[in-house]
Image (cartoon, rainbow, N blue to C red; front, side):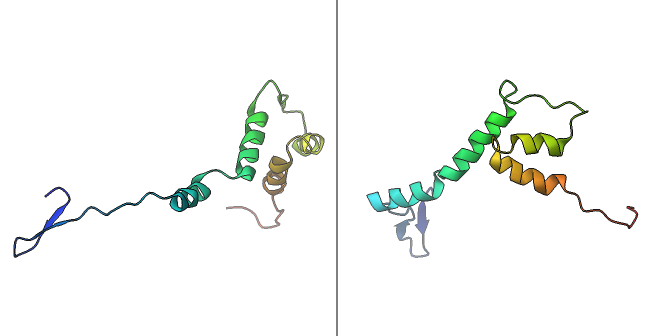
Length: 96
């Protein structure tokens, strides 16, 4: 019951693992679970892009390729993504 294991001979064993807290395991988990410098800079770039005060609003008459060409230095990582998603391959096969 509750963390203990009882065998047929009614011997009781503690099932809770022993945890030793040392500096090396803390450093290991910190290295795995803390965000990297690159992910933090991507997050900051996205927040800057989403901030309506800093980023001008795009209107329907603006060409998205032209807008990103003008703003790719301000948002370099997002500009890379836009090249992928704004460039839809042309096809001669009708879509279904």
